[in-house]
Length: 328
Ligand code: TYM
Image (cartoon, rainbow, N blue to C red; front, top):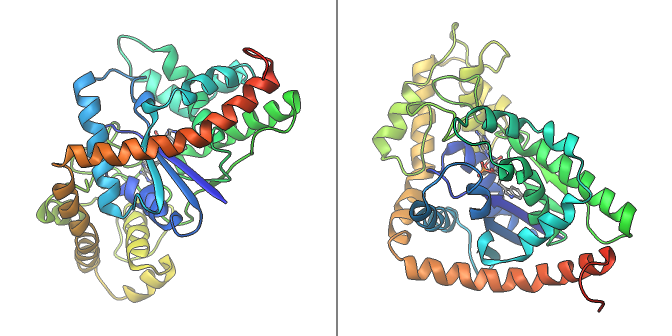
């Protein structure tokens, strides 16, 4: 069994990334051959600063190691170290429908936010994401809810490739957590927590000091009423119940039961304590790791070598099947 997932080296990683994705990456190391990629080539599809991009790759690498990824038990690498991802992206574009790309929610959202240039790269983004996973013939892709449509598309691309050129690629499945797959902004709980779309006070960063984490949770927008229960008209409290459920390792109904007699304020205090207790050690380890750029570069370089040894085999098969380049 092989697991593959990718994360963008943009902005600071937040509670949503941790709960929806990073936690699953860590757990995946013990279940399967786990491969994780920091996707710098995806990050260039929107305006960015070249110098900052490099620094952000180290930053994200440090966060992942601090959260528990162990280079002895998984492969962690930078997408741009390999040529195979971009090459496979182009080859797969031959079996990708333009109309399908036009329907992607993320493209619609992100292109609406661009004032100067909507890049062709932003449009092709989901094909590169398909190439990331299909190059490793991965079975499972741990992601948050917002990536569901991209995983559906990569399944279609793999199936279309296999139908057209013969069984070559593995059709992967997503692994989206039932609880915590979509963590909401603490200030506007009807939008997802996000570095680009969310509010500063509503986004809890892994890098935040203890006090800022606690304040953001204590000031989280909650709903009218006073019962600690999940309900469609209580997105704020529902969000905090999910967060608590994940960090406590119990079901959301257990959280509701435990706090059945509590007021919102007491419940938020308990959530704040739990989140700080879980994230503070990760933040502290991150701060130690992120200063050692040479060490981080060594991890990425070794990961890229291992990744290449797998992806190059898939690329040789794909080129052969497609009749591209010289014969074997
Ligand atoms: P990215 O970098 O935006 O996010 C990384 C992971 O965090 C999850 N996530 C969330 N989960 C729960 N609640 C939230 N509020 C929240 N916000 C983000 C995302 O679902 C994601 O799993 N396109 C991808 C990167 C990518 C990729 C891949 C993923 C590139 N190639 C191949 C899987 C496989 C992205 O932009 O994730």
